Length: 123
Image 1 (cartoon, one colour):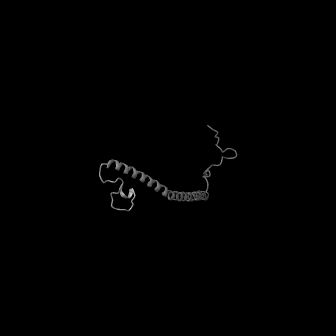
Image 2 (cartoon, rainbow, N blue to C red):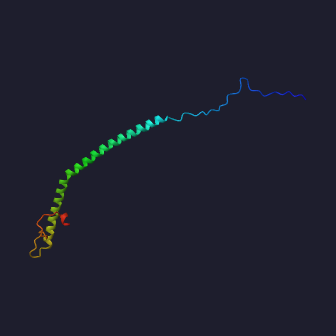
Image 3 (cartoon, rainbow, N blue to C red):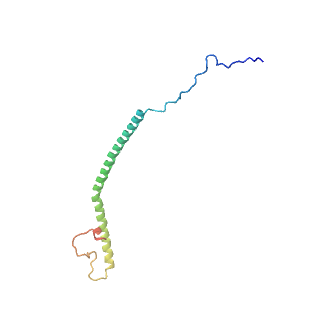
């Protein structure tokens, strides 16, 4: 029994090279690029905050001056309303107390000649 063996040999030109190195793609920008981007982004944010603070301060100043200029008008309106309320109260008092001898409608029941606003008297 004579068998002829044929040995398994590599192909002509050899086998393909074994790929043992990791082939990783680039994973994004470098650390300095990221640091520069974050720094630029934060700088822009702080700049916008500064502009917002300036505008908010100006609006607060404008609101304060508007209130300062409106106080006399509001006080005059309050005095006018208090005067009309006092006139209505005096007319009602005169109608209710018309049968009481010696009663003067609208006269102060307090013994203090100093003027006090209705808010000060607790009315």
